[in-house]
Length: 256
Image (cartoon, rainbow, N blue to C red):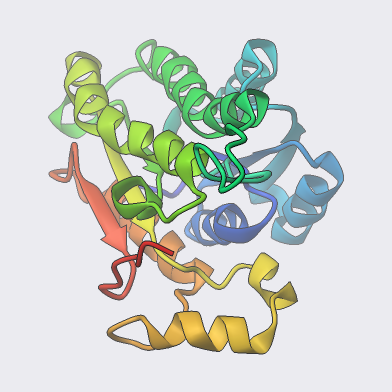
């Protein structure tokens, strides 16, 4: 999969890992569509990238919004690249807390929708578009990268919703790769550890230092561009398919 002149869709592309990916792909010549709920931020990032980028506002859990983003991307060039970064957590909690109160069901559903359902919605609609396009070498029509988390492997106490959602993305990877093999689309997944996104800049310095100390090597947070570098490699290496790659400095989360 070549980057130059190929359309790329990055969900959650206006901040954090998605922004870093948008910038790296655009710098390599891809025609990037930044799809984000915050249209103002998406437009600012796209504006800084020049003619190789455009912004689309919307929600990855909404079929119409996501279909519109796919169409906008494919309108610029054949859609060959998707990096699904949209996700996150708007809260957490134990399955049952110490006072016996059960986890809020709506919060659990919202977290699963945003991460797992939103990722699946993006992949299914983008892959359907890719299926209509002419294949390239090896009959490849596209490459998709999804974003999980190491919380999907060893989620901590209080991460039941987020960990379950990210575990679902991990579990989808090999199935998506097998399902989409028939149309020549590869699917891989990145499971980041603690990454130095803007959200961590608001955390107390001692909290960040304690987390960094737990990383075997190097003893620091990952950089968003390191995520973007890996996403670029997963797109361009034509024999990588069905893989989940941990990007975490070899850390394994403690129970809490």
